[in-house]
Length: 373
Image 1 (cartoon, rainbow, N blue to C red):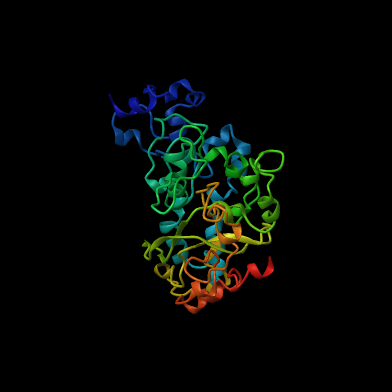
Image 2: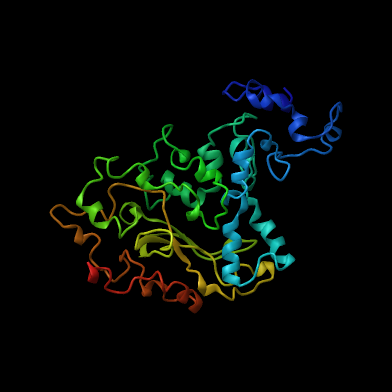
């Protein structure tokens, strides 16, 4: 059978495109090209591979309101990349052609169109139709979501790292990403956030677990620590951190398991005093390949960033103690050594001076927080 027939009419797995409402548009109506030609090269003149991307987005025909929101969403704009580049460098990424050329080559592929979630796998993972040419309402967790968000979120959620098990919410064929991350969280609300934690209607643990929702919520630990700690401080397992990333090369350092609690670097938008922190791989010469040998304002942004690991468990090293022992033995004890859960000045030893300065606001002083209980 010819390839185009397999794509369009093979419906053995429920992927029959021709039976859906989107078949009211013919192939040329969406993809362009030239009708009445008998050779592939002639028929593909003017072909638009992804008609859901760019100003001429075909999805606007019916989904105008959703797209107007999405064109300002983080997945579409990649505004977070621009924002942090400009904060650390002191320059606009658009100031020099070399910066934008490098960005388009090394980073812009992470931009995703409507079709990258609802028809095919995203471009950064080489695309490919998810369910033949069926337009799917609910993105596929493996072929869409963790195809991009795999090395940290996916591996943690599936339990692929040898130092931690799967997330308690990982229930195959029952729960997936969009059970928590759906609607406005993905498509936006028309505002233009510059950080993923500022996205509207962001998924929160308390959407499902909280007073009047979860019978197990009302206990002395939650009441005592709710305003002090993010949920992940107690309920995350060890998660991945990385060192050394260079444009054009990717991770040039190492990836490893960590668990560090520090002061919340996003206290302006989130109330918790303590959160878990993940080391990100940006270094002073990350963008050397773009013509910027040194990030002049590198120390203005921490490299230990707030994290929300997707490897939640009810019982962790913080919530489980030996029989007859108090919780003090698990977390309230200041170990002052390699097993200390808190990010200390000693954890920054050996790092370049600029990186040590960058993280002063998130480091927990020796002795704290026990001194303030």
